[in-house]
Amino acid sequence: MKIDSILKFFVPNDTSFFPLFEEGASILLKASALLKTLMVSETMEQREMVSKQIKAVEHEGDELTHRIYQQLNKSFITPFDREDIQALASALDDVLDYINGASQRINLYKPKAIFPPFIEFAGIIHAAAGELEQLLHGLKDAVKNKEKIVQGCITINTLENKADDLYHNGISDLFEHEKDTIELIKNKEIFGTLEKAVDKAEDVSDIIKTILIKMA
Image (cartoon, rainbow, N blue to C red; front, top):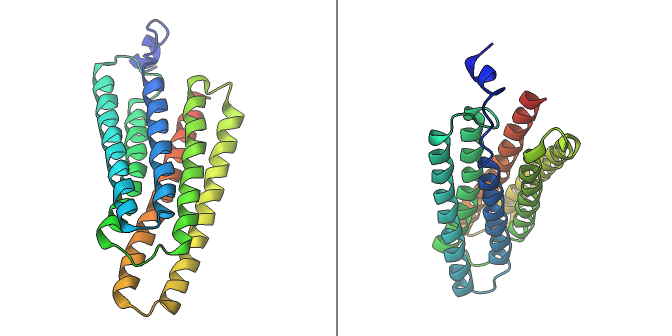
């Protein structure tokens, strides 16, 4: 038996990670809500303002990730494997990075109009962020919340499949109808970043599933 396993019988787990991950979920949900607002903003000035707000939220996420790593360095016994805590923090940060990346591309590239599928993509990202918030809240008592966590992971997988279809159909439509090469390149870049955000959200749910299996 590993020494960590033996020690867990005598030393209480450090539960300080749960509120940190819950805070991360709230930050992610806030960023995804702002992304939805960005997509329906009617002027470049409005988009720039919302983009700055998303950037500020992304900085909050960076600071939180740093705090999680600091806590990991200080903690002797963690509620689940250290590598899973690190992976979960990193994956949450990745989702935020891609949300911010899409926002910054819209702000910098200044497309003539928001491509309609982008609005739907923002809705998918926001829905995935909402599911992740529930999953991360559920980790405090993973055994009790096992079924809810499993169902939430399935929902996120469904959202990711929906995003894949939206991406492929949208790219096809973009190449078929956009005659302005510069606009095509701009929208393709934004599209790819949005798609990555959903992929990373699924990565978070996969890490949570791994944690759940280990805790079973």
